[in-house]
Amino acid sequence: MKKTSKKVIGLTASALIAVSLLAACGNSSSASKSDSKTISNLKISFIPSKNPDDITTATKPIANILKSELKKQGYTVKNIDTSVGTNYQAVGEGLDAGSVDVGYGMSATTYAMYQDGSTPLLMATRKGLSNDGSDSAKYWNEHKPTTKTDKEVTSYRSLIIAGNSPMGKKLAKEANDGTLTWKDLNDAKWGLESTSSAAGYMYPSQWLTENFKHSIRDLKNTVTMDSYDSAMAQLASGQIDVMPEYADARMDDATKWTTTFGAKESIWDDTNVIGVTPAIANDGIMVSEKSKIMTADFKKALSAAIKDMAKTDEGKKVIAIYSHDGYVDSTKADYKTAIKVANSMSKAN
Image 1 (cartoon, one colour):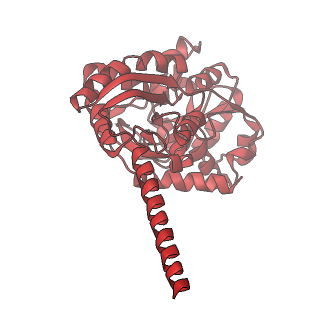
Image 2 (tube, rainbow, N blue to C red):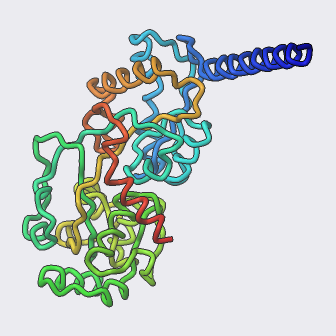
Image 3 (spheres, rainbow, N blue to C red):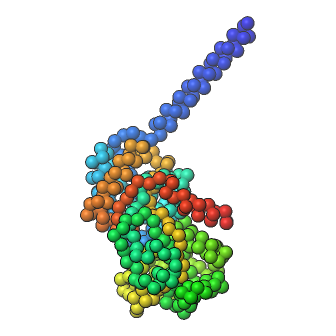
């Protein structure tokens, strides 16, 4: 009996300790994110899909705009720290580590690569393009220049663009004739974006695999660019023959083509489409799962603040750097195709 009593007492004590530990863990977890309506510092990192200096300049006003909009949502944010990532992965890694609270302008596949450490908050809307409905390179070439429509869309295509170099012209002719070969694509010099870029790397790789049974990693002549502007400048000068890009990039750089980039003819005369990818989910605004300020309530407030910011004249100027027109609520389900592409690329390693 005494032994039994000791056992019962021991078990009871152990149970109490276990309950206490569970309660402590629960309290620790709930205390890990602050429920305060005052935020000391909100860290936003922007994806460098355009010239980093241009993004820095364009997004400078966002701190004051968001402070004002968040105040309307009941939150006082003392400081908003903005930066431009050195590359796409740096923003994803920042979210994953919790050193960045918000990743702004993240491509679909960058999110897919870092989905465990981040959550979609909003997806950008953009004006659709006149040729969006076609996956034919020849059609895009026969209907130049591309123009914007009034339709708001949440996806876009990546185009594989050939420049005005001798090889670029050769590839364009083959694409229009339906005689494009892997040999010629492999002989060309390609300008590529970061390996996590949806339009500048991953979806074009899928296009190569589906049409030529090769990955983008199989190309023998490639150079990695730090932005689309850098690649466009080299395409204009003939330093590269081919570059994958988001479909409205030529519209964005039409003026720079003959000024900053020094080309003699218009961008529409000098470039042609040789490949068109399936639709890609628009850029997103993601929040870190490791961030201690990202409570459910603050996410809701931040979402409303950014959507309201995009409706103001000053806010429209800020988001124009990414060709965003506005934002809609987003979930992981919106990026299922991008996740599939990212997983496919990962398996190919």
